Image 1 (tube, one colour):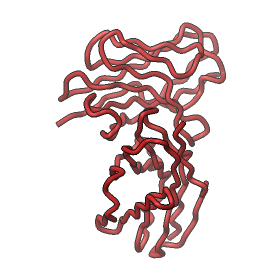
Image 2 (image 1 turned 60 degrees about the horizontal axis):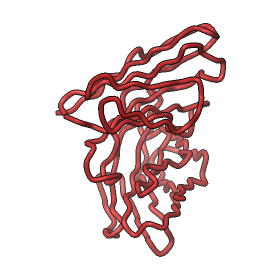
Image 3 (image 1 turned 90 degrees about the vertical axis):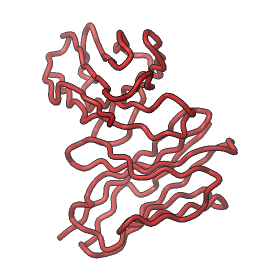
Image 4 (image 1 turned 120 degrees about the horizontal axis):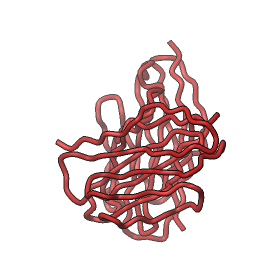
Length: 115
Length: 112
């Protein structure tokens, strides 16, 4: 069966520090991968999605970036964190076929606090 | 552009009451998909159900039921005999040509 791993679960970082959040999927090939942010415990904001290795689409311009160095690995990064980057970050995947008729499956999330 | 509206930001009921979470969507697509997700306090989003635009049959799964009505562009979710463990934020989502769009969620509080 497919599983998704996301780490770390919790992160406290000072303003201006770098960031690297990692997400990996097991049990499937060529998935679509997504990074979302959930601020103030509510709505989901799509940050990035990827349909293949090295293919990244950005939905919201900001100081974050994403990379997909391997088929089932998705990394969210920042060179310098801002206070506004605080939030709950969720990684998700879907099978990558059939368009948006497939549900996305989410990792456990990372709670990021910027001090 | 497609849109999902969950007008109820927070609902609080006493355990064992029935509760309905509303979801209204907008899309120009003729083929689209609707989803419900549950986000318990621990944070992860759990997929509950998917429905395609050609299937208006209502679905029941234990205490959960979903009512899809294309005429009113609604996909409502009812929990019967609610339990404290149902307390969570529930998201409705629409999958179509513009991608997957989530509503802002409804925070459901079940009081013992």
